[in-house]
Each structure stands twice: as C-alpha cells, then as structure tokens.
Length: 92
Image (cartoon, rainbow, N blue to C red; front, side, top):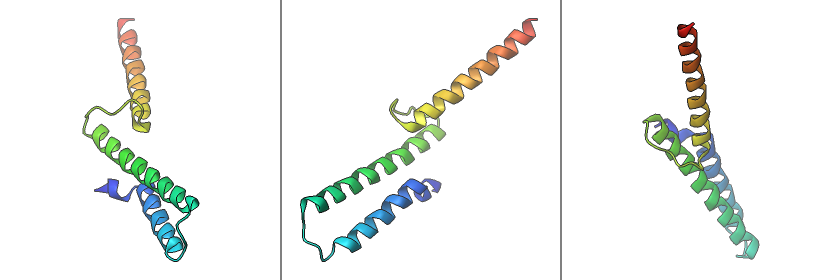
C-alpha cells in the first residue's frame, strides 16, 4: 500500500492534473502532444519503480536496468564483504 504514496507516483499524478488543467482550452499542437507523451513516460517509470521496489521487498528478481537493482547489488556486495571479513576473523 505504501507504494501508492511514493513521491514519484504522486509527482506524476500531480503533473498530469496540472497538464490537464492547462490544456483544456488550448489547441492540440506538437508541443501539447510532446507534453502528454512526456507525462506518460514519467508515469510509466514511476509505476515501474514502485513495482520493482515491491518485487525486491518480496525477494523476487528485479530487472537489471532498474534503479532498485543497483541498490540491491550494493547491499549484496556489502553483505558479502561483511561475511568474508567474519570468516577471515574466525580463521585467525
């Protein structure tokens, strides 16, 4: 449930509402089309990040190009380094 209130998702929805208010009376131009396309991409990325965060929390695999994957890799490397240090200290 907390993924629904992520800052990226809230920001994308707010930007969409602002874009909708600003484009009600305006004619459809290539700039308006690009603005809506940009908003759609932003919304898709925000949803994708929330999905990846939920998958990572449940221990499911996350796509390698996800920002969440980089964080997981860093945490794994840190845990591995800590584990190796403990094994090395025990061996002494």
